[in-house]
Amino acid sequence: MIYTKTGDSGTTSLVGGTRVAKNHPRVEAYGTVDELNAHVGYLAEMVKDSDPEVYTELKQVQRHLFVIQTLLATEKEVPFQLPSLPDDAVKGLEHRIDALQQCVPPFRSFVIPGGTLVSAYCHVCRTVCRRAERLIVALGQEAPVDSLTTAYINRLSDYLFILSRHLVIAHGGEESLFN
Image (tube, one colour):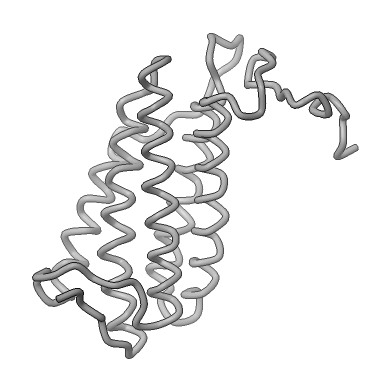
């Protein structure tokens, strides 16, 4: 059954069973990562036919985001093995950022989101990622947050920015720069 009625009072369960308010900082953080994951999934489907390599990358990002959601939804030790981000997840994003930077003009000005629908949507993903990062940092001021999680989300927003620049070119658009 999809509904349990246990959240009707405004609380939800974390991994491990602790109940917290649905607006608890931990729920806000993993909920925003969940939102980001949905946006990334939509972006992946937008590029599936035109850029299979980016599609594959975005599907990997989604798997990493599911791990992050699980980690953020866990506040205490649990009697089972939690998933973990691969140690090289951040480096993988950095390598891809470096490769994409070789394919776009040098960055000389702020970029106004747009140029093509897919590039504009990539900026939506980037801004949701930045919001997730802010919420994760806020949570980290109250409770321990794995440093790899924070680094991954930070680097992911950089990846989404450079990917948006790549996509505007790949899809025949033109960047609009703020002068």
